[in-house]
Image (cartoon, rainbow, N blue to C red; front, side):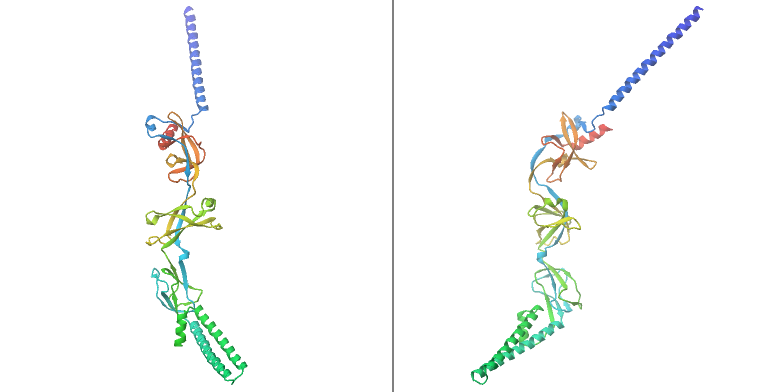
Length: 390
């Protein structure tokens, strides 16, 4: 009996111990859960990073500064012929081309003959001039004879006046015929030769109106042309235009006289400095752009029309807060800067920046003027920050 009572007491003691152990385990588990919940409710700032000794070796800090900044606009451009040094040359008469003397790429001088046109219109005008010129000569002799007869009292004043009137009319018709020949391209020297030879020539010559290079020929031998048709295009290539189309939203950044640099990739990224000579006062309604143009020297003929280029346009200097381009961290199509927050502690701050110029980028928004920022080592800091987040 006593032995049974002792067994029952032992069982009660074991149960109490188990109950106590279970209660302690529950309390410990609850404490761990509370700690985990507390950690979840106050997460670490993902933008903050504490640089270790190795990373700190790469980091260099400087205070943001304000400088005279020139904003640079980078736009595609192309080379074209200077339209003030270009001529489209055609025939002065309607006729058929019998000879073409100049070819594309040929250099010509002013007054060089480029083509020959056979024209019945010209021969008809020459014939009309010869008739008028002969009539004028006859009228002159008749007027002189009438003057002599009047002085000899053979004819009256009315007859003399009639002969003088006929002379005036003949002179007017001859002058009009001469003007017509000049319109058709005959020089005064050639008209004088026509007066002397009295021989009609139906050949008209197309001559160069300026010295330059033939850049276009639009006709072939045997083709009929009219005065409105262009036969040749000649251009002086010693000076060319470089034109760019500025987007409408950025057109207020460009003005006549702004400094520009033209970079031509086909010539090994050759850079040519100049100034804007022209900025259109209207917007192209189809492209929503404004045309800007500069002029470049091309005495060595190394630059060719239609070459592609890049135009870098510098605005006038203004006081701007800037950061070095190497300090900018690009992440997710956004710009960031590391700002110093304490000893070896840095925070990644989002910023809005303008286009780069001379290694600097202007601050539009997101950074205080006297902030200390990381100017070297931002890449290493950002790598360490990302590793800490994993």
